[in-house]
Length: 133
Image 1: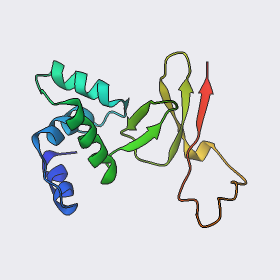
Image 2: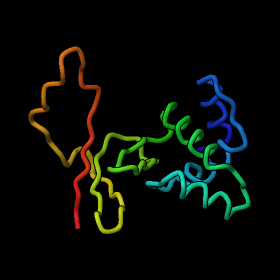
Image 3: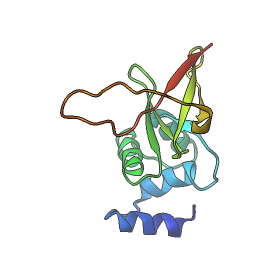
């Protein structure tokens, strides 16, 4: 993704392409590599590349990227939240020993019957995390 395309996407969503947003985009989105990252990892990488951005700004930036569809947020269990650069519909293996997430492409999985949601609500989507050794 180019800086111009990113700037246009933010503008279309009523947001500005701020310095922290650009720094995070350059780290996660410009090279086309698919990643599962934590906010802490992003903050550490930014510091090591001389982009001093607070952890709060990193969280705000990652959440704004989720809001406009540049990232997916994955609840990996416990207090762990992971951001995924692969925004297509897919599921994950979670290596319990390392915490590593590995993509499962959705065409490899069939679910025949989802549970009935509580009254007054409807299923908007679902995802699966399979825990492995």
